[in-house]
Length: 100
Image 1 (cartoon, helix red, strand yellow):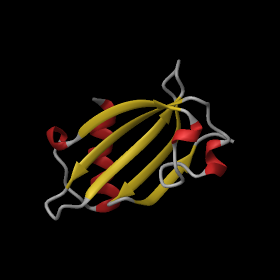
Image 2 (tube, one colour):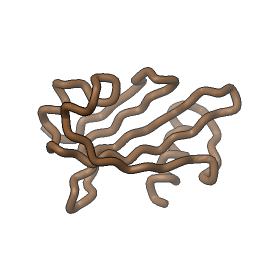
Image 3 (tube, one colour):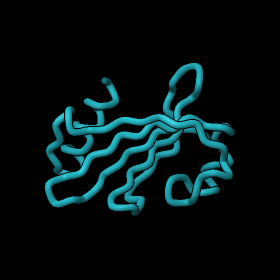
């Protein structure tokens, strides 16, 4: 639930999009590096992340039909955020790498 509220807050603060928590979908997946493409995580960032990695995603479709997605790579044991990516309509619009 914390990530849902965070997503709603970020959507309003950075993208000026009002989102209701109940309209946000959530999924989590384990991926090996070779299963990912550069849209989600560029190769230069992947080399700094664990293999396999856990990605949690939150997504929302606004009233104009734009699909928004935030993806997080989390450290398995601690759930510490290692990487964050934002995608709108299939295009990466922002990212943050939290590891060196």
